Length: 197
Image (cartoon, rainbow, N blue to C red; front, top):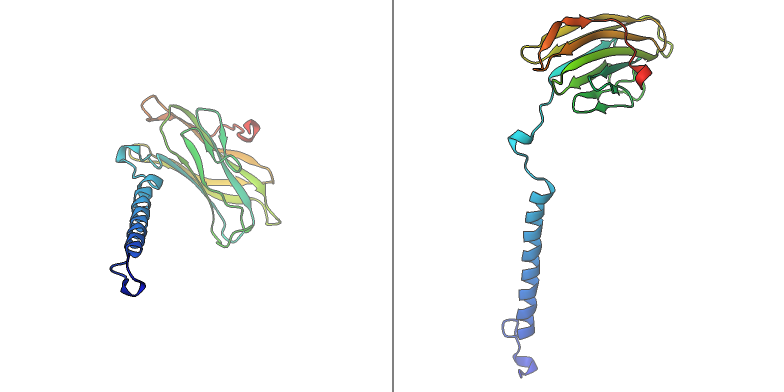
């Protein structure tokens, strides 16, 4: 045994053991945190990253107005995509919904939808005037539908929405088994998407 006056921090066995245990605990914590960073956010391989957009649909209407115009789409699976139903299968996604001036600090009125895979079958793109909120009718809406690469521009033009709850088919088109656009399939024969909602 040591006399009480003879113990120093370097010679006290309890102090050395305490420092060793404390050091091992801190080191263990650092190792665990380091390993957790890889488990929480695994790095994706390039072949796992999905293709963002094959076909982009955009709708613009007059800035600074209160119109609530909704962009709707339906792919070969027959599931409607629009306000409240933001995605369907692997193909259609509503990327941006705009409600005019409601809860919107930006003056730009704009909605965007993407088709992320070239599944074969027919695609329908519609516009729907949910509410005009006192702004004058009709509402002019500029719509563009364009694909990557060889698809190119499918539709670009203005559409008039003349009354509340008015639904208009902007364009319908089909893709073949190879994901190529069938040029003779492009038309705007009316087909309600909201009826399938």
